[in-house]
Amino acid sequence: MNFDDSPEEAAFRAQVVAFLDAHAKRKERDGLSSSYYASVPSAAAEHAHVEECKAWQRVKYDNGWAGITWPTQYGGRGGTAVQQGIFSQEEFKYDVAAGVFSVGIGMAGPTLIAHGTEAQKERYLAPMLRGDEIWCQLFSEPNAGSDLAGLRTSAVRDGDEWIVSGQKVWNSGAHYSDWGILLTRSDPDVPKHKGITYFVVDMHSPGVDVRPLRQITGAAHFNEVFLSDVRIPHENVLGEPNAGWGPILTTLANERTLIGGGQSQVSIDDFVALARYFGVAGDPVVRQHLALQYTYFQTIRYMGYRVQSAASSGVQPGPESSVLKLAATRRLTHAGDLAMMLSGAAGMLAADDAYLCGFWQQQFLNQWMSKLGGGTDQVQRNIVGENVLGLPSEPRVDKNVAFRAIPT
Image (cartoon, rainbow, N blue to C red):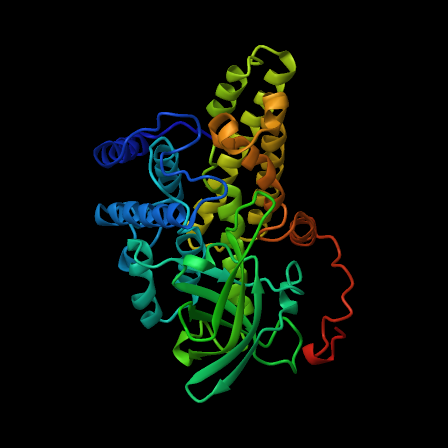
């Protein structure tokens, strides 16, 4: 397999660079853009970052560079996964704001394309790609995380509306989102993987209460969301009522691909620069760890190409996305540990006292999130074991039992 650009890919890369050169500036410091805000941002700093993200997304949309793999009829470019990879590689080199559209464009959008009605696609996809509206994910609950089908947020049909009540948790960016993708229990008298309805919910609806959660880093990027008799129009059901598990699998597979194959915040050059800054770049042990990190980067890059290429051909990501996420988790764990090893005693500093305003300390602390978000490592290994290796499924006493009858 030849990983060098083909003539067509080289021409595409040149177009990407020409666009970026015309609309953005190259980064001037390691791993960070000027839009990067502190690990514990003020409300004003966070708002400014969100607005910068929206502005850059609109620039991409207006110039035909948003949704590269999306179908053209929905505002995308109709390109390949390799082209998306090329764009991401080049965009990373520039000082642009990104990050708040990962749930929308990376997860909700593909799910709408696969399962939504034409009216839903027409309403939501273009504003999503333009950067007009931000999306969040309302899946996990206090007692339903890895066992997502154990969710208890209720949805009761009332004419042309549904009344939804319950609690969601670990909702990234919910406090500045306009829309959410929401899972509910709409029929408790069937087994738990059935009786689930998938909604699109307006985050500004009466009864939606978003509360920030303070993390180990001191920031509050996650939230818990309380839903109290929230009325959702029936037209906002994604897929069919009580048949939400199909759309759920599409979303989760894209989430794992996004986590595993998404552009990292740092490159191998950033680790080399960190080693040089602390004067340890010549240490043989350090060089071995740098080589390992480089190997992780390249492995994940090409694994991501395979998964994204299959998806762009109409094949929904499956167990491959779990393998990709496991590989990415391993890289992130090693990356955080390596950053602290290179920093030595300076790794105990934070914020303005630390190199690059504590950026590397944040990388270390955030590694734990990668092992949980999008399905824990243990869940991913079960998926691979059962669907790739053909191992027997774990015994489940609740498999064919009505959800209402499952002990709490």
